[in-house]
Length: 94
Ligand SMILES: [Zn+2]
Image 1 (tube, rainbow, N blue to C red):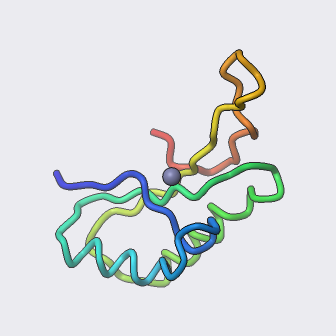
Image 2: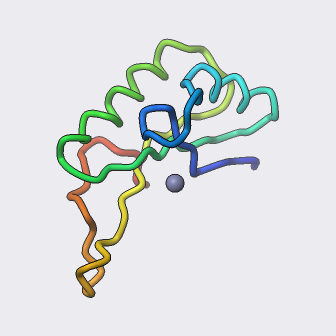
């Protein structure tokens, strides 16, 4: 199985030009079976991003399976491994 489980979109602020359409086309072009889009979630203000991505993905017909996750950093100032944000609902975490 070919996969890439760490992909950012233009919505994360550091992947300019990485539209959902481009990502899906490229994934199919290189023959990936599964991708996971994992934009950063730093605060509850960004909890809407995974749903927005999932809705946008639904507009396209693509061969590869698309999971929508999130990249959530561990808090640096804290030393107990806590995350910088809660985990938004409806992510593909399995
Ligand atoms: Zn990343």
